[in-house]
Amino acid sequence: MKSFFKYTAVAFGAALLTLLGYHLTQEQTVLYTPVQPQAVNTNFTPTTTIKDISTDFTAAAEKTIDAVVHIINTSVEKGQRPSSLFEYFYGRSPREYPRIGMGSGVIVSSDGYIITNNHVVEGATTLEITTNDNKKYEVEVIGTDSNADIAVLKIKGDYSFPYVRFADSDNTRIGEWVLAVGNPYNLNSTVTAGIISAKSRDFSDYDNKNQSFIQTDAAVNSGNSGGALVNLDGDLIGINTAITSNGMGTFIGYSFAVPSNIARKIFEDIVEYGNVQKALLGVSGNGLNARMAEQLGIEETEGFYVGGLEANMGAKEAGIQEGDIITKIDNAPIRKFADLTGYLGSKRPGESVDVTVVREGEAISLRVALKATPFINYYGMRLRDLSKKEAKSYDTDSGVYVSGIENSRLSRRGVQPGDVLLAVNGKEVDSKSDVLALDEDSIYELTFLNKNGEKMRFIFE
Image (spheres, helix red, strand yellow):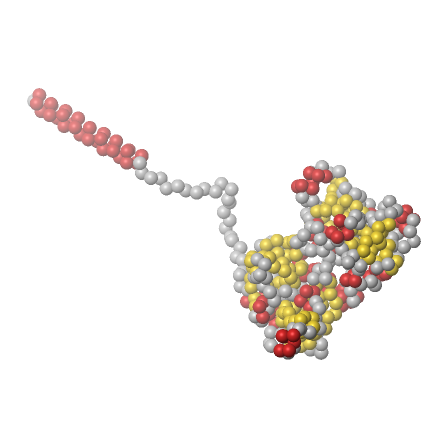
């Protein structure tokens, strides 16, 4: 009996040890089993619906392609080309030979008005367009704006054409799908797609061109200039104008278009008035950034800093002051200089706008009447007529006021804003019209009067 209990206890102990060893082995196995990681985004709240974005470009392309034309610009250049073997061996005589340039244009009315770039038609002796159905027409230049690089043409004859409707370019958004339609490399009726990469692009903060381009990554190449940039409704939001290039004139990622609101305003001005009606607030200054804000000792890094005010212009009359920061015009935010010029580029003299300025930390809204520009650009100078008060202070009965200077040749010789231009090529000038009547390309002498009453005469070879 004792043996029985002894063997039973041993068996029970062995079983217990076996069970304990089994559980320990299982725990080890669990401890070293790899755990699959799970990504958890604590900032994301799932939604039940996702909005589909259409990427079907066929309808927009069909609405646009018949209204975009191929422009052929024939001009004449003088060169040294031999007309015979005799001239080739014994000397060349000056000859004129044709130069052919190509671009695109957009029909914007059923009777054949076309918007294109000024550089597409500049210097043309003859212009011809080809439509998408391979028909050729002669066109005439109605007017141009070299500053915005826009030209308006009219197809000769009485015809009816498909045309592209204008859209409001202010309503375009970064990231929006767009199509570029044109004739790159003489390939008629080419459509490319991309998105709006940026708005209010200005190539240079230091030139006198008021640029405010739409930037897109739709492929644009040589020959696309003057073509259409359209939205997915097939409506015009811009005129393709320039590209970033590697120096060979080929597209490397970004292109730029004049916004349709600016192009439309220029088109309507040229057709109705014969010239562009430019409207100004009457302020001078700079767009703000971190560096400029530090120099000025202010906290704001966005907006337009008012450094000066023009006499008898709307801004001064409305109560805008030097040191104010323009942050909004109507409902358009103003973050940089191109925002300001881009919005004003769609306005005319006589219109009024609501201008929001920040003054000593307080936002103030002022109603400003826009007026026609009092300035002309001539030989790298920004000129306007002298006021009676200024003529008296300078003790002169003639001359025009130098408001700005971009000509480095004159700047190096000491010409500054605030000087008075008295004469061009020895001919006294009394007004802007006197200056414009003189050929800018034939200047050999300029006479100025500075703020100290000293006359400065410069002779150029």
